[in-house]
Length: 51
Image 1 (cartoon, rainbow, N blue to C red):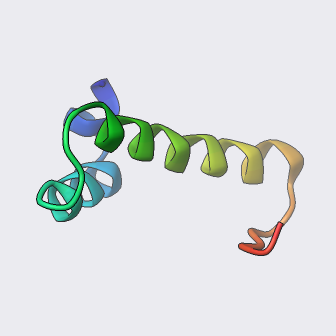
Image 2 (cartoon, one colour):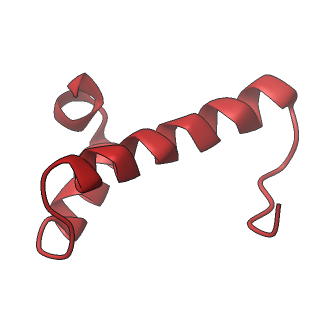
């Protein structure tokens, strides 16, 4: 995934979780983080972890 190589926040997340998650599960975790970021920006709402 390009974001892991280019985006410093996602890259740091990837590096921190490399020992806990492996392979596709780690890539999906990074992708979910990006989707949440996109949704917050798209819908112009603050992030709420409870939703």
